[in-house]
Image 1 (cartoon, rainbow, N blue to C red):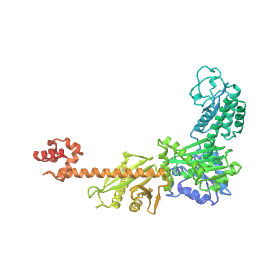
Image 2 (cartoon, rainbow, N blue to C red):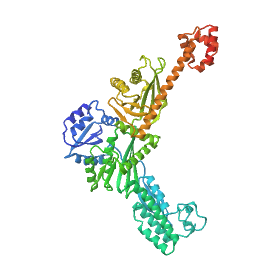
Image 3 (spheres, rainbow, N blue to C red):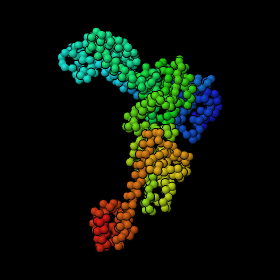
Image 4 (cartoon, rainbow, N blue to C red):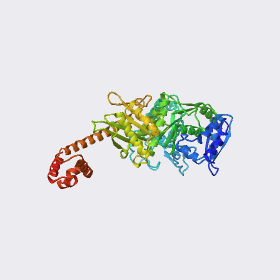
Length: 604
């Protein structure tokens, strides 16, 4: 079918809630969606100039037909959507493929077993705890338990290597029981190992009362060495448990979910907290994301479909469109009450920030940027209400120095860093006098006129435009961009009376940056850089004008001859290297004038 035929078919749909299935020419389902009103939602795909993002445009271009199922409520549509997605696995619905493989805690199969982190299941008969999605969580847990219970981590074999060498450094710094000395019996070791495994499974929350009783009994029996070991173990467990308690307070069971985006790439992180500890972390990476809110909503439903381990609290960095509907869905899927929440302060808010920071770090590894750079762009997008992060930012500044020193500078930041190969300089040609607003309009008009003309040097449209100036600059440029059909977010960078970045401004008003440290730092860096670049060009131009003026002081040298000299030699350095004969030939002057000109150039 053509787009118009699809639109006409959609106009006949009901206004009831339901699910729709988009199909390609081969009849394959390529996308499944839900709607409160089927007619309104499906028609929106086939309208001209609908403002779809790139992913939706690609999907619509492949739609040949669609089917639909009417439901009794929006909630029924949501549940049905999950079932249909699971059945058809459509190409344009998000994939929940984790970024890593499975990891395990392995208890080795030997007379004195060790506890280690592994990714693949070993061939031996040892015990496995897991699987876990996060290698970091597994390594951290193994490191903690070996340290708390002073289990051996060296390469020696026991009991074969008993008393065959001096104990290692870990023994001397009290991070190993010194099993190599042969002073720990098999039964005592097994008891310690059992406690260690219980620590892993319970997350260190189990009471230390039993250990305290054993410590007191050992002291009463004058076994001070055992009492000291038990005391140290109690202290270590409490130290780690206290750290977790400070972080998590009384919230012992929850999932914490955060997202980060860099350009069209996004990452979702699920921190699984059980018994007050982060026991696992799942990473999800997507390559083509044009609306993070849309991704978040679809991900949350897909992630909790069919899960049996949903905790009673799900903490979100931002809410889906209908938080109440999502809560109803969680209750239906899990069989018990689940409270989704978006905390505004306190420990839960800190956990959301931790999840977001982890997502930013995962993206940073993918795009070869730092987590701080990713976080700064995330904060900037959040502040400006953008659906995706501004990956390619252009900033402009005007610098004036009399009639001959009026210039504009354009700098580019890509993925949070300067992209100096795309910097551009503009000498103001059309505006008379020191008119900053007019000069800024001229620079932006010339830049985007070249974009519209297909100039390869200006072929990329920015995600965000920043002007070094206030509301007046934005008001001067915004109508121009609308006239040219350039639909790019535009903001001014406002300084305080000490010339420090203070806020971003639109035609309507200002947006304070002080509460978003990473975004504030990024915008300040951009504003300082564009100002530096414009000033540097203006000074270079001013020096060039002064140099040319000095050449004109030579008798017989006018504008035309200076222009010919600069065209031929281009730089002051090359002019100084030129001989009087070369100057005479290019400027078309006699030997006497050429000699005077040569001497003048050497003195400049």
